Length: 273
Image 1 (cartoon, rainbow, N blue to C red):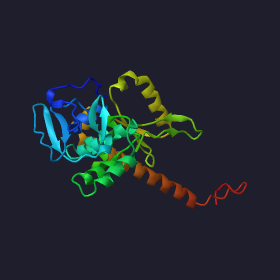
Image 2: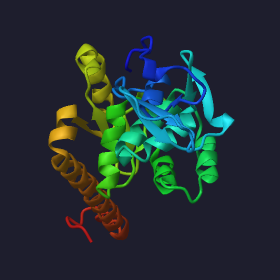
Image 3: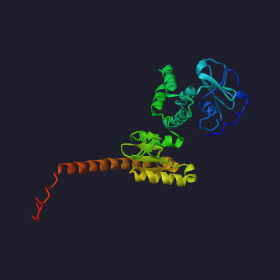
Image 4: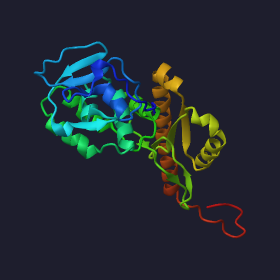
């Protein structure tokens, strides 16, 4: 997460009540994983006489009092209004990344986000906001995990479960992959910087999962950013193999069930009837 430092105070970023921090600036003030903005995003009333100033990007819009809060001494749009505003400027995946983080940190809830979508019905960007809410996942634990999930979903693959705990038949905890397809017994892991420091524990966890017939695919940021098609293809092929394997096992079980057991040979007959 980007460190929270004391916000810069150029004259254009003053704390007067008619300039409220918004967009990426507000996201940063709320503690989301974005870089401090230059220029600063600010919202002013639609009919305000405030003009653009150096270092500030002015957005004109209506704000109700319930959409304004205070962060680090600065009037700021609420986290719900901030995420709604970002739907107008960022890609679907990147807004989902920020929404996942906000939900995971309990800065907001799906109900509160859905309520603001209802209030903005008919306004520009509300359809994008509803789409982001539909893709959001409070259980997601990292931005790259979200980007991996969105890469797969937007490519048409089924949505995997996030951070699902897996236990063996005796109830013993085996592991918790970042993403998991329970019906295919396929786990997906994003290997970030912490993987190098927890390599031994990660390997032990992987061995426990493999011993229970659960396959794992591991991906890095380089995979997601530079070879996304290959990532999608690898997951799609592995999911397909799981289906084929399941059908083969079912067919084999059916064959065994349909074959009548042979009668034991009569004593001394020297043959099987």
